[in-house]
Length: 433
Image (cartoon, rainbow, N blue to C red; front, side, top):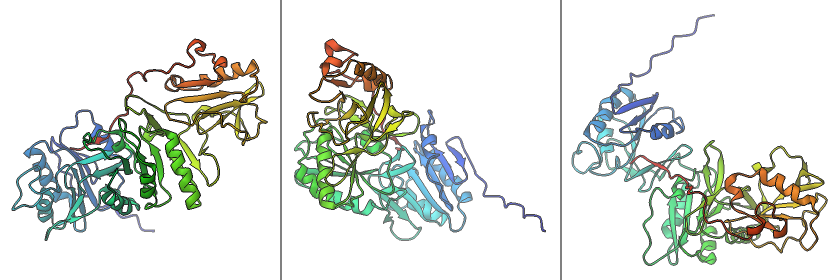
């Protein structure tokens, strides 16, 4: 048996103080004192035959580092992707190119390879993707550059979503965002949108688009206008409220499920990554001043049925399941619901009427103890204490207990509404501008 052939050495990776290689074919350019850009860039999908440079060109020396390094890295058949704001814009950053070409077009001629670059700002989105609000451009070294979508990696739903965004008008404003579409009420004097808005930090799902409904500080949009937009999209969409009542979005989803004849999923808040890189839903208050992570992150609206949780929430982890409840002891269990958590005897039917509970607005966690209209046994208070101990401090600050007389946490102020969440904010996306 012949010995295996020795591996062929790869191309040399020239580096400088402003260009740092994270791996073969992946580099960060420009200032990154906290290492945030490097961490985000490392999560981009690996692309064989593609050299990717992400970062900020802060001066001519940064662009010179790119043009000096890439000729050695770009082999025949290689493609270059520049996650650098303005690299695909005429007279963009770096050395002034010939005529009105972009820096990417000039680089494409230099290395004789296709170069993808954003026309305007580019965002490094949590979860490992790049988003160019003005679109990506592909320069081939000869002829004008051509459009190449808004997102990288490019999801299957992109063309459909961006077409809807371009053709929506009237009383509804529709914006393309990294994860899909953002629809909210149109105003005569709209406040500017910043790329630091948490909508731009929702990790995209390549299989289905997220439709964000509402904007903090604005009245909810007309549901009829939103339905018209949703009818133009693939039924796999994930709906999420943003500064509007959760009940409004659940009503939209239930209506669509009935007309489409298939389930429609709703996130209870903006899908976002927590500190442990888990996908959770962050519910934002109508004024945008506070947010929290509800126990139930996803709800499914099936035709003719009430919304139900898609998966067990963390609050019931480790508990024994008994039908649609989870045992808490003393013959009681907890059932996750669309409006919160229901502590009840496990033998109660899943379709027991709970119509007395207010529709969920997404700002509070309702915990119903016992059966509506019936006396609550004393041991239910012990079960309530056990359940509350399983919640996060942020969730405990949002609790409303019904009936109020069983509230063992703050009985004298059970109806009081907390004023905030200790100044917590959702972090925005990292921009490579």
